[in-house]
Image 1 (cartoon, rainbow, N blue to C red):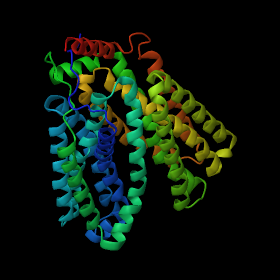
Image 2: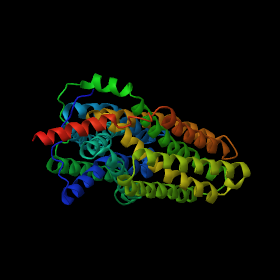
Image 3: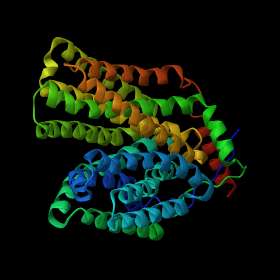
Image 4: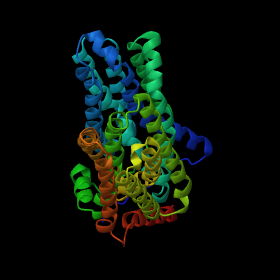
Length: 424
């Protein structure tokens, strides 16, 4: 039996506290992704400014993603050991310093290195925010809170490339990093002032090895993680292959592709809002199965449109993909909730492992998606890949998640907390 934990301190559920906590969760989750996409419009300018090839300038993005992946696997376990607040503040402090270094970078290699450390620090918020949500909310509410945080964050994330482009045009590319430095500093100060420590206190010692061992031997944890990670790969593979299909195969402009791709982002946003709306009233396994069924139906329809030739028009391809993305939001948020709820006192380690696998596998799947889109004259291979990923997601729920005792750890914790409250 795992170590009994007590209620986390500072879990005031008043409306004011809830709103403040939600804003902080959104800010700490979004600071790294927004920083990633803000620089994208300035990549051609960076290549010209430093006199380097665009592929070298692209490393300011690709190594940023490597930094995000590394941060997940490092910062999650550290937050279990030392607490959420100190790890968050250390990570955001690193981001502030690295962002300032980006401002004063004199060469492209210096900028690339600073961007890596910027991601390493900034992504702390991504992994620790999920752990904080699990600290503060019951298992059945975790999915709703994750969905809500993602939904609010996505609005800012979708606007970040436009913001970065406008800053570069008006003030130059270094202005982007002035904004990022200021924003990360403000977030760090807000966390220091307004966010209490939420980590659960352990009565029995566990440690990193104990956390990892218990998670890796849990079929439920492995099943939820694989379900979430495989669902996220649908986004990566479509985002990588989509431009080639629309621009090369269909002969449309890159601007038109951007507009159509935004529609899938809108569908994902609406899916997260819907998941947040229904999560408090339904078990997360039920919501995952709803998402899996709808996701598979959309993926299968897209394959049918591809085989019959209808997918040569963007409206067919993206119209059905919007259904896939709406369903994908249900799968990702609720399977993430399941993964970090298997052993709540190790929520940071669980969140870090999930984020690392998601980003690491995403880098490989993105390359595969680009190959499928760029080396064929039809979208069918990409449609098949999405169907296969949808089936793989469902398989993890069928073969890995135990039908019984799904919430044994949660039940034991709630029982212990109830007994503790009774004693008090």
